[in-house]
Amino acid sequence: MSILLKNGSLKGEKNVDILIENDKISKVAPGNSLKDDKAEVIDLTGLIILPGLVDLHTHLREPGREDAETVATGSAAAARGGFTAVHAMANTLPVADTAGVVEQVWNLGKSIGLVDVYPVGAVTIGLKGENLAELSAMADSTARVRIFSDDGHCVSDPVLMRRALEYVKAFNGVIAQHAQEPRLTKNAQMNESELSGRLGLTGWPAVAEEAIVARDVLLTEHVQSKLHVCHASTAGTVDILRWAKGKKVNVTAEVTPHHLFLSQIHCESYDAKFKVNPPLRTDDDINELRKALAEGIIDVVATDHAPHPMEDKEGEWSSAAFGMTGLETALSVVATAMIETKLMTWADVARVMSEKPAEIGQLTEHGRPIAENEIANLCIIDPNASWKVDAKDTHSLSTNNPFHDMTLKSKVIHTIFRGKFSMKSGQVQK
Ligand SMILES: [Zn+2]
Image 1 (cartoon, rainbow, N blue to C red):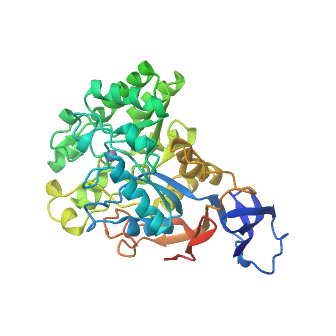
Image 2: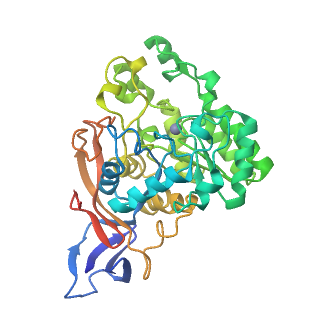
Image 3: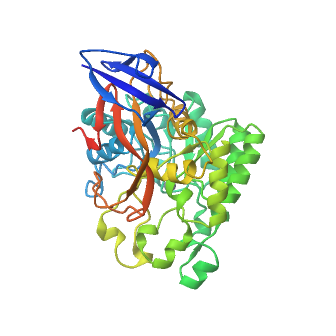
């Protein structure tokens, strides 16, 4: 079975034909120059071709919360969003803190076969922040874990954080920190500001994130290890990252689509679909995050796709769960925030949503050049699309999408995973 993609725009730079045979790209040639009578021919005139997207931060909820998401439904949402690889966070039930659990998630991903699912291992047993989990056993397992995170919880004890950073050096691992000083965010509900005071919601100060990022950068430099900062959300975090990168500290960082696009003003509605951890910040923060992403101070976009059943998001703001879905809207939100504003090009989007995340995850078959003999993992986008988000139109089991009813630019049309369509003309190929 072969596929011939005709006359698509490679990262928005030049038109090409791509012949895919089995799971590989077998030929790349100038637009409208290839012929193959046996291949399925798809005309991509006017469409953009990027390497398949890679998410460093997805919550798939299985095992344990299959009412919110499963590896199967999350994989389908990922395929629809243009992703060919996702990293599944460890805050499942049981927690992914042993080789057994990460292998279970890895095998589920393989058996579904819509996207490569790479488990993230917990840093501490049960995410309790007390004792290190079996990091090397997870690294040596068939899931070959390289990213470790207690995401949802901060590894707040500096001694434990130091030990974790030291420990993962043995297998070139990285600690991905959810930066939230717990004592500064007790009962916190939204960004600390004049607005939180007016709305009567407990404030979540920027310094609660920045204090941990600064501390961890210093610890990482001290023990010469690798740190990844999850969901950077403040201008102050950008300043610290700029300083750390200037000093050549081995730190990378991600920003979510929602922190690039939505501000705290949405909290005025008291609609808990805007309740998220870390919270939506100010317009100044959004501007600094966008600039930092374009500049490379923030390395990647990661979705923090966090599905929750309706009953956990309805009712009073203060009792609702934190989190938003994001796999199916990520590319369009980034295009609207970064391409429409001319802050980035499609080649930049390929860098921050595929190449760099694959490099951080140490993936060898994703985020690669679109060239002969590479595995065919591709994402094909209509850059002229304009569409209104309907939260109910989703492959996720959950509908807590904050972009509901908003109009976004650009849309993923096809996803090719290991040489086959995982999504074709908007339809996931189950
Ligand atoms: Zn988190």
